[in-house]
Image 1 (cartoon, one colour):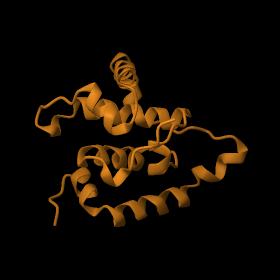
Image 2 (image 1 turned 60 degrees about the horizontal axis):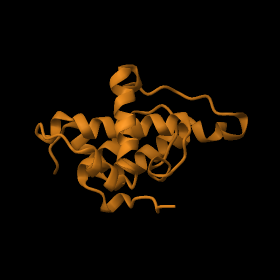
Image 3 (image 1 turned 45 degrees about the vertical axis):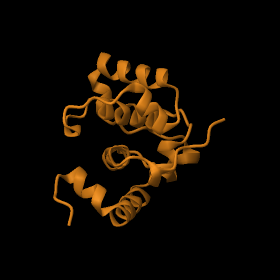
Image 4 (image 1 turned 135 degrees about the vertical axis):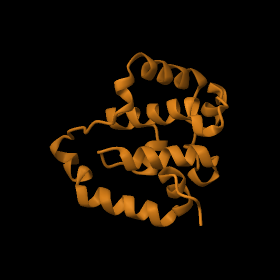
Length: 139
């Protein structure tokens, strides 16, 4: 099994989309969760949104990233990226994150305090990426 990608070694556009996905999603997730292999609805949906945006993001100067290039960075097969992008194009509602009701054993993971604490930690650790997401110039 492949090792998960290392976040700090990923290109800046990939890191920006990962943080954007975490901040906009109503579910609690970490960078490690998003880069991992879990196939829960919330994580798979967040990955699909990341990959679709990386493929179609106008902020990249109109340059469309290849499926192979995205797959290489995320350490996935290119057909996984193709399938994810096709699902989003077939149903644009998949671009809107939805809250997932966790079973009782996992409810504490969706705790709002835990989620907001992690978001604050991301904002403090990666201020340059956050400014890219918010559209503000980097200091």
